[in-house]
Length: 441
Image 1 (tube, rainbow, N blue to C red):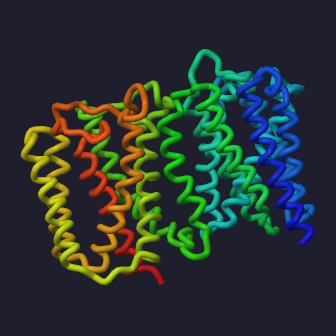
Image 2: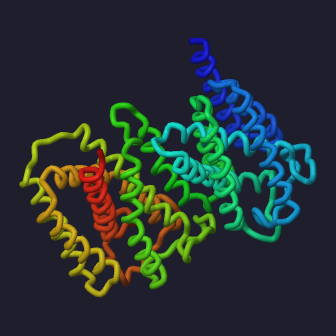
Image 3: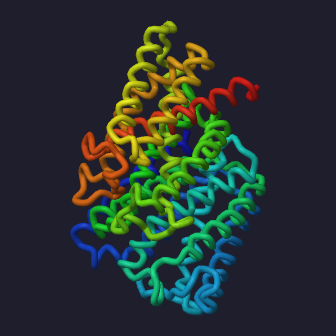
């Protein structure tokens, strides 16, 4: 009971500190920025005192992370080979070998928090470390603009290099792998809350303090997944137990869509506004666009899981046939309006084949659940795609060449995007349902 009370008090204190810090950055940046070091020390202290296991090997490993992380920073500063060419400012305080001593905590705290979060995932140690390293990359992407603005560190004669993110991933993966193999009680709600608070805090600073538009597409992806991620652990649905099949299905379906995206970007069917991108690209495709094919299907599979669990209706062939006819007519009209447009033609034809296949071979219950889910998905999809296509911003994050679509838009969203969404989500649901029914125990 006492430990639970301490945990709730600690969480309340962390929430207040981050709210006060955000307000301070908005109204008194020069004053609040000098409290960064104190905040890092206090957050580390209040989180670690809530650790359930006080064994020496646990804290010894955290000390090891702090020392090795610091040494890696020293080597990185001196050689410019690990993260790229950078140097530290004065905000983080006392330096030893040109690296602030507090950088050791900047490794310990997020690694510890992410390690605790990944402890709740139903995967082996390699899987936990891999997903944890992705969370660490997310943390770093949001932190970098803030660090540069407030003189934590600066990059020398360059933007943030891809090497930095690669190094963060590899180092985080190895630290987390060791963390997972250390045998101790890894339950600490305070650590989970601290990490989520920091993600929200850095996101708010990027948007409201820095007015950093370069993070916007990344933030759209992040917040699309945020609520489904949190609610995945609820006992009623326990969607986290479906993650293995969900992520495998997302990956398989995403690959051909990403290849198509690369081709269409090259052909000028659509493109991306550099003002809203962090600048990291894979095969000339923004990393945010790659993440789109993970974030959107993940959130949609969460909605579908809720549909299957809580929205049970008697099977209706009339409902299914009506949906098939509506979407078929939609696809045919799209092709008819611009039969020579790459986007209109390709998405219209593929959707027609997909509808025909599902109508012929998919069972009634699965197809009905899919169409019900898609009706719900259309609401958040319209909001997210509206953000991307400029419905709520001065310029679109993603622009479209009207020569390759019907010119018909809803909130700046080309109507082809609704068919594209149906295809992306429909195929992902198809594959996940098949794997769950045939290969899951």
